Image (cartoon, rainbow, N blue to C red; front, side):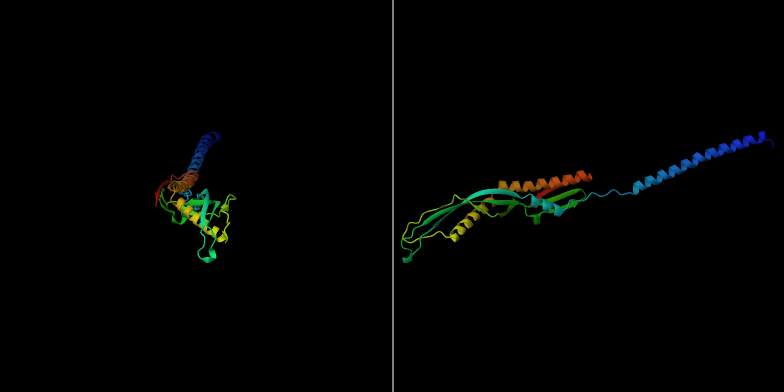
Length: 213
């Protein structure tokens, strides 16, 4: 066989091999792509965390509303009875002092129920959580005692007067619906802000409903 007769066969074989190469390469790329897609499909996205009840209770603690007050404890120490108290007179006195009342919700009574993205949070009515230590004002007054027998105003008399005045303060704040509502709304607002931030970070559309005891 001459060289001239062999050239077409070599050319055909070369062309056939040239066609196989891109077909094999395409088949490899397709398999790689399918594997990549399968890997993406099986990779789970991190699940958005649910709001934490302990965090919500901590928020309620931070939501405490502090109210400054100024009060006056007014009292009268009556003169004593009997011969040993002849000449005594009633003594009037008042004591001015200042303090801080703390209003908020009881954290232990805050509850949360979650169903998918539906969240129901129960907030109890706000209440007086306590009164801070008070400080006395220099504007207090004690009447003079010019009787034959003295009727002194003792530290115990002053403590009792302030204790009674403090009880009045407790009653006033415990019945102040406007201030208690402000404390409750403050807790609700901070909780809403906490859940909204979670929604933005994790792109989770939480639906929150508030219930009140």
